[in-house]
Length: 268
Image (cartoon, rainbow, N blue to C red; front, side, top):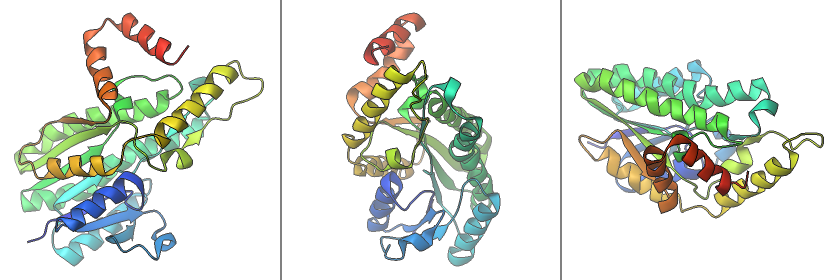
């Protein structure tokens, strides 16, 4: 029997790449978008409406899949939003939106699928976090906080649901060539800002890193391996060597030494 997969944020980028690969491998894939009507020519896999910030749409999407397929085997919590800016100048509303999309939303989707997985006595959940979630990065502090929090939530929930035959894992990507920069909120570079020069330069560098990022199919292959693993690890990292190695350095180096290394890297 084909396993049924729900991928949040499946219309583009990493989510789309994951969906295409899983569909090719014989999985029954449901991707989601806040506005699937915008993708009328989308044929790679089924695309249904879901906004992770709206619990009613979450429940409706999960119910639709279960009624159609009779089961739900895999959840890939991929939907997310980028946010940059000096924390002092980032609007409170945008901070709340980032947490709603990157943390509260994935929690709500997990809560929606767990009853069915518990009934089946099986299930895999993969939360897409970020290497940025392992460290507080300058001008990306809010993003780092949302993804780091999801890493910890995963650690806790994983222990809570293991007795039901459900496995949860994190996969943290580095920079990948996706459209995340286009959809990201970035605090404007204000003319009278004390951060103007440094933040303005760094914003351009962040966009260039995404444009020069790895092929998202690499992430898709990593996710496929995770859901095919009976007892997956808690944390997976996917990205360039130095991006992954930065996590190792953070564990090994004294805090101030690591901070100095980051500041030198970002020319602060």
